[in-house]
Amino acid sequence: MTRAALFEKSGAPLRIADVELAEPGPGEVVVDVRATGVCHSDVGVFSGKLPAPLPLILGHEGAGVVVGTGPGVTDLAVGDHVVLAWLASCDTCFYCQRAEQHLCGQPRTMLGAHTMPDGSTRMSLDGEPVRQFCGLGTFSQRTVVPSGAAIKIPSEVPMSSAALLGCGVLTGFGAAVKTGNVRVGDSVAVIGCGGVGLNAVQGARIAGATTIIAIDLHPERLALATELGATHTLTASADVVKQVQKLTGRRGADVVVEVAGRQETVNQAVAMTRRGGTAVLVGAAPGVGIDEVFNNVVMSGKTVKGCLYGSAHVKSDVPRLVDLYQRGALLLDQLVTATFGFDDIGEAVDYCAAENGARAVVVT
Image 1 (cartoon, one colour):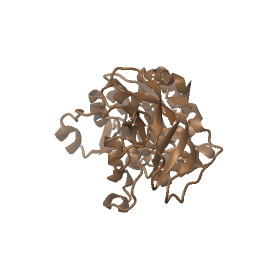
Image 2 (cartoon, one colour; image 1 turned 90 degrees about the horizontal axis):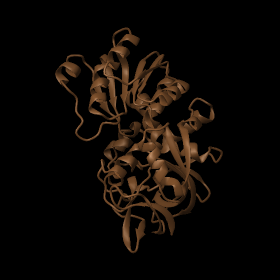
Image 3 (tube, one colour; image 1 turned 45 degrees about the vertical axis):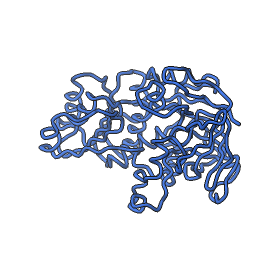
Image 4 (cartoon, helix red, strand yellow; image 1 turned 60 degrees about the horizontal axis):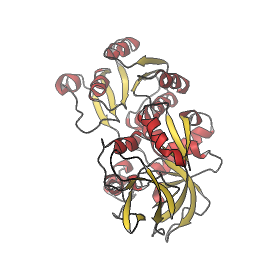
């Protein structure tokens, strides 16, 4: 049994309830969730913009402590501190063998059906299954996940900061460094400076970009972007493309990372990318397209790349990010701009929905 924030109906508030938690199966672990971030994907499902089967335990960005292991688990033990990641690759399929673990088919079930990779769930209420968002369901005080979704970290890393590694940091950092391949001396623009975009700013800084332009509507987010490495900040507007071109020798940015996910910002991202540059689309929602591909992409030789989870290989990337954090290069503590208790998880969702700060973290 575990306490969880149950999402049962679109538009209805989360309900704190006691749900049944099954024993871990082969290759699975039980994790006490000590902290979970609230991501805009959670808000999208809660608001009804992103469809999902119900009832559902939201949450896919968390950290905790292993309290139980199923048969066959050899790389984790009770007491290990872990980051929970929603992309547990199989390491054997066509994509994994090509070092494209983020495209592995196994996590697609976790993402689409919000179950374990075999289509089952480890949570239930009154005998009926309860789905776990992205196969994790971190809006609960305890969860069962595939062992590949639990990445061991040093015990001295604060849980509130570690939780952010599970989605926002991996996605944003990877969007710049891995998907966008930012290089030393590049100019980079980031549209949308919430939890993901701010980490794209950090990734660009750590990769050696010399011009980093943060674009957002909210002054407090732009101020935080400056602290994390932005060299310039712009308030989102209809003429922001011209402003970026002015800051980049009228060429446009070498790499543009779009996180806001709106039709107008996607078009702006492509437009502000220099000829031959790369536009990385992270936040685009269903139905969003690119206007005038012939002129905006083909004739300018631009590359438009989709970014899933920062093109991450979680087993290697999480430890690298932890190392950067411990050496002071990657800033995590500053990203936690609000902390809530578990009983106030609904307020944390509202905080995120209102586009406040960088990340709200729920301490369980």
